Amino acid sequence: MDSIFQPKQITIGENSLQDIGKCAKKQKITRLLVIIDKFLTTEPLNYDDKVNQMIKKENIVVTFFSDYQGEPTTDHLKAALSVAKKERINGVAAIGGGSAIDIAKATALFYRDPQMEWSAITKQDSLKRLPLIAVPTTAGTGSEATKVMVITDKKKGIKMNPGHSDLIPDIAILDPVLTSSLPKQFTAYTGVDALTHAIEAFVSTKANLATDQYALTAIQIAGRSLPVVYNDGRNIPAREEMLLASTYAGIAFSNASTNLAHAAGRALGSRFHIPHGLSVAVLLPLVMRFGLQEAPERYAQIAIALGENANKDIHELAEQSIQIIEKYCDDFQIWKDALNYIHLQDLQDNIDCLVKDALNGNGILTNRIVPSSSDIRKLFLNLVEKLNKVKAIKQV
Ligand code: NAD
Image (cartoon, rainbow, N blue to C red):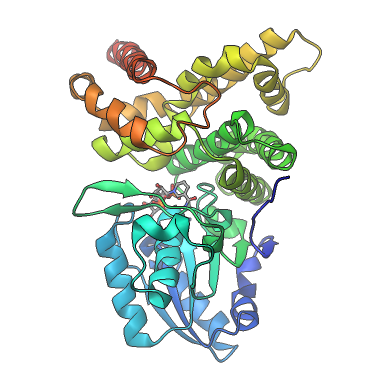
């Protein structure tokens, strides 16, 4: 028997943000804290002003919080909680990427339950939290539909990522107009992150019939729309498809787990301060190759979802699934961009620590082949080799 957890309501469509006031009212919110990505509050976007108008119509008092930079930390959370307490809020909304949504999840939880220990979150039968609405502006992390929140502990320097089904937002609003301002490179990083969620969920040992449907649909939709939005960020129908793909991929992995690409990607991202999506994207083809022999029929289905002709040998299709992802990494400059963050000698010198961090991360035990430390070492050495080749070509 399997249970699937997801938001109670998913609202999707061009200008669906207009619904945010009604959604807040439905959640009985009267004093709302909106955690909003700072970029979205600048000219000419001014989403704080727009959202203020939308929410005030419902007689809801609204306060905005944008005082965070980069990916969220316990310091950002502390600042958000302090505003929340001062404003005596009774609901939280996030308008932003995974960073804004994860701060909102943590604020909703720790406002209601300040004594909660991070390490105890996953062990609770249920959590007390404020009502929560998520409006993703990247596509993405899928955080609007997942039970996970990722916050870096500033003191210990580690990324905490506890999961509990009560952390899934009540309502997700998927408005493609909001993602149309996302720059090309973040469109690529976050888009491949969504694909990675779906692919990892599909080959996870925790996959089930239901998560497979979300994962395969996400792979299919992202496969046709990601190249479109990368080349034309203002294509609203394709942006809408990417948002749905990201949400479905989020539901898939939230219920079936991510695996080695995320465990190793989180280790790499934390050590070299790489944007989350990029750190995962750069490892995805190498992780797929590691798992290929164990589940060729699953990789073949991934290739078919990505548009390959089904009328071929399973092993040929499985190999093609990797080639398609490698082509995305080439076309979207994923390898080249990784070189802006990673000094190759540093990567080589830090392999021991990376292996240790990856082994301690979530998603190792649900990988179809449970990787040993020497497997993960080889994975990072393969990354060094690949990036060396890219660097050599770049210098010619
Ligand atoms: P992000 O929220 O950090 O945003 C990335 C960049 O894009 C920022 O510079 C931001 O200002 C900008 N941006 C966002 N939306 C924009 C828009 N519409 N227009 C222009 N610029 C925009 O990136 P992300 O990849 O969405 O989130 C990363 C965080 O999410 C990491 O901390 C990661 O660990 C976490 N994460 C969480 C989950 C989960 O289930 N909770 C899953 C995967 C990753």
